[in-house]
Image (cartoon, rainbow, N blue to C red):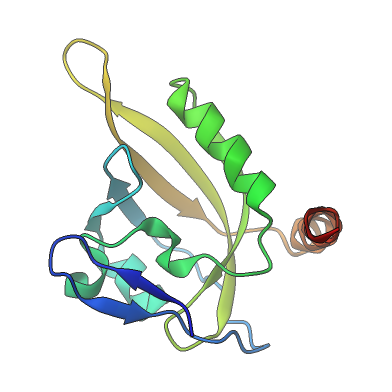
Length: 150
């Protein structure tokens, strides 16, 4: 079983084995903030409820704690390139809950800047995805994963 390490507490958090059961995102405001390395510095109540993780488990953990193995690395490579340039990124993401179930969201991520315009972290929000677009994203990501595994 894979683990992530919480950089604040040193706690080892097991990543669940995925199960083929979706929990639809019903809307509301899911917000997270990270430092420039992708370590979670803030997760609002809605995000904690949707993922099943506690505040103590999330703060200090890498945001990849909820990355579903169906998501290709190339999708996140593009995301990181975009936000490190200072641009906003938006895309469909399949996430993994603590209980192994999954959920789809449209994620937008934008840099947080200090007074000098230097990137000091990132803020991400989520929107309810379109079911047809989820199907298209799932097909695209499956093709990308197949290429990555060859």
